[in-house]
Image 1 (cartoon, helix red, strand yellow):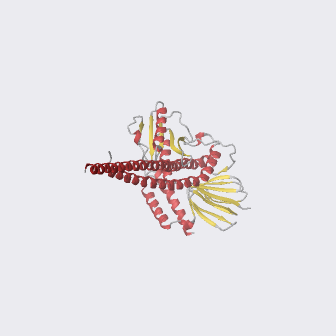
Image 2 (spheres, chains in turn orange, blue):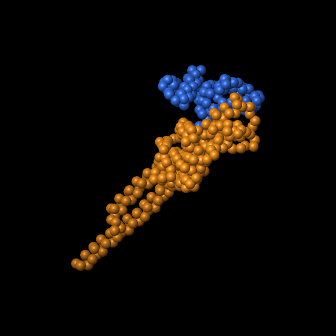
Image 3 (cartoon, rainbow over the protein chains, first blue to last red):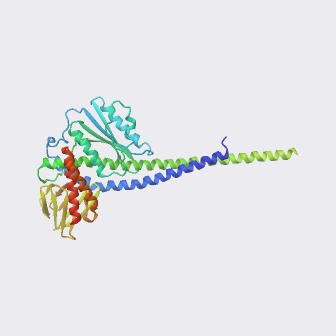
Amino acid sequence: MATIRDLRGRIVAVQKTQKITRAMKMVAAAKLARATRQIQAARPYAEKLRQVVSAVAGGVETDIHPLLQARDEVRTLEIVLFTSDRGLCGAYNSNLAKLARGIVDERAGSVSKILLTPVGRRGGGGFRRDRRVSMDHTFTGLGNVNPGQAREIADDLMRRYREGEVDEVILVYSEFKSALTQRPGQERLLPLQPEHVEDAAGYEIEPDPARLLALLIPRAVEFAVYRALLENQAGEHGARMTAMDSATTNTEELIGKLTLDMNKARQAAITAELVEIVSGAEAL
Amino acid sequence: MPVQLSVVTPEGPVLDRAADSVTAPGQEGEFGVLAGHEAFLAPLVPGLLHCRGAGEDESICVSVGFAEVTPERMTVLVNAAERPHEIDRERAEASRDRANERMQRSAGEVDLERAAASLARAEARLRAASA
């Protein structure tokens, strides 16, 4: 049986863990607030960009721009898997990896090559031994996301698509619903499909639609990547906050149980001592 | 009647105000917008956006993007926008010099294009800072 001293030591250890999980929860909450603000700040831009792109691209043939053109046969599929750089956020990363694996399972038969590009350090691990995918590119060390990072990633993706290295690009990232729910979701990035809007405003376009689209479409792709980064960032902090909250609750339970055990052990020791004294006195 | 001008970037709205006239750095040259302008859409290059009247005159430095104009509104969608007093002169100068250097050395066409774009951005910021 554990001695009183052992139990006291364990209680102290669990209390230290609790301090850490509690602090991590608070840090995650603060970061989540900032990430949510970033998402909200991006909303007006997103809305306007969507309107403009659909107004211009909706009325033209897809052969006007290479990034709108779908390939007749998809030989190489690129999956961009957004995950976090750090762990300790519950099942967050494994849920994303699971979704990505589902896509791989589904498409592996029909395409000749699948490129998996993890964004964030926690994405690639599970696929390292998967023969069906090759990981040639990775992006890590994101920190607090900014549009510059999105541009860098998007430039790479667009170049590969243009040069025919890949025929389709899918983004897998966590859609941010609220602090408590993150749902892994997927979105086809390339070829780009502009939404059809009914009330598309008639614009006079300068210089002409083709040249305007040549500038507009890369912006739209960059922004789609930026949004994925933002939602993913918010999802990560939300997931970590939830995970650390339940970890803190668990340590509380554990401390309660250990304290009970310790008190029992102490009482047992006192009883044993009393019995010794009493039987010693009787012997006299 | 003034035109309602808003400048938005992926990092958030920068400006939302009424103005009597707006001048923007279009790809085909600078253009002016007054209220009642015909609806049109034009690409922008890095440069200065001026707005006058209906409040204080103001200039802000924009990077590449688009302007969407309707008779009542003008919406400017750009990658980045800064007010002149927010511009860090030293950083802008450093990035201009770096871009210049890259233009000298760059081999590929893509590199050259990128260097030219970053040079244009840096120069626009410097012009804005000294305006």
